[in-house]
Length: 300
Image 1 (cartoon, rainbow, N blue to C red):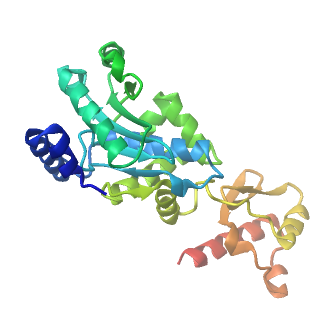
Image 2: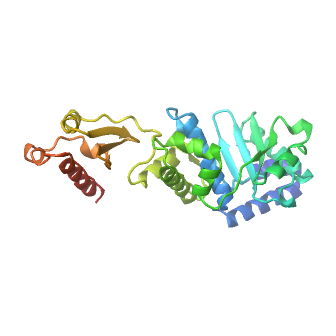
Image 3: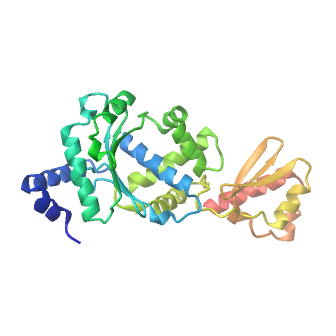
């Protein structure tokens, strides 16, 4: 495959090849990106997973600071490549300009000729809604089939973003079985940690969720989790106590009794304990205490 820098020099000239290298150097110096770009990356990762929860998430690949004219974020799907240039600003820095058009046009050609994506998108991502509306009118007509503007708000914390922007809350609920704000916030931060930890290198959505689930104690995600079955011995024991219930949630068991609830890793409770241990579970509270001890041993 022809190198991107060689392609740029041959098709757009030496000056653009040098500019591409400067863009790359600037990206290397800011490899981890800002909170705005990172929050959007998490949103897109979770959007993909929520929309295709049982699909092959290896098919979706995300990276940042590639050698590109549009380099803040890149998402590769089976037949589409989308690049984003992020502008967290309400000033002229977020304006669509003639240079924006030129960079987007060159990047579209690179995606088509070098990477083989006949269908590609180049998106100017802005945090200011007024800028987004104004910029939409500035996109040249011939470019509208592959270039555009998207608004995504900026909030300092994931919790503020989830509470204030419904699309983010919706996709987080799509990857978590439990819709409490604390769970959605925890899940967002786990995916964010996996993304920032990758340092922008090319990873699949599957790989990012694998890492996020690895560091999640307990697992708060339902993506990629086959629904665990409550073993017969545990279900029988729970139903023998009035008011005691057990349910499956995000690959975990939740045992509840009179407002008291404990979440347990389903894998740790699959094997039936020995008879002498079962004999000690004479009440729901004894069962919950045993489950908590089993969790402590499993995490140690």
